[in-house]
Length: 30
Image 1 (cartoon, rainbow, N blue to C red):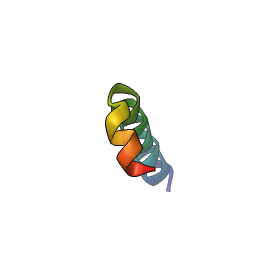
Image 2 (image 1 turned 90 degrees about the vertical axis):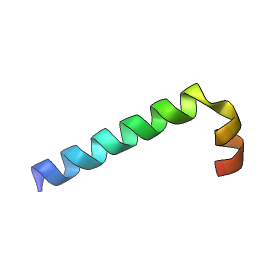
Image 3 (image 1 turned 60 degrees about the vertical axis):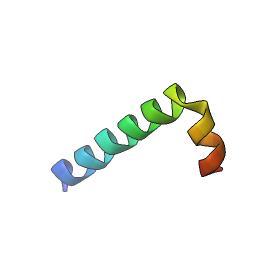
Image 4 (image 1 turned 90 degrees about the horizontal axis):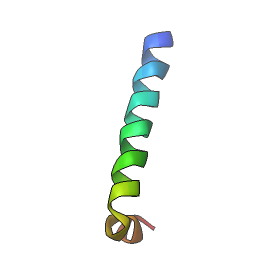
């Protein structure tokens, strides 16, 4: 389970970085 949650954490981090670098896509997501 530790590796599973670690993978989710990495995916969330990449998602946050992508949203932060592209505000326009964030508008579409919301």
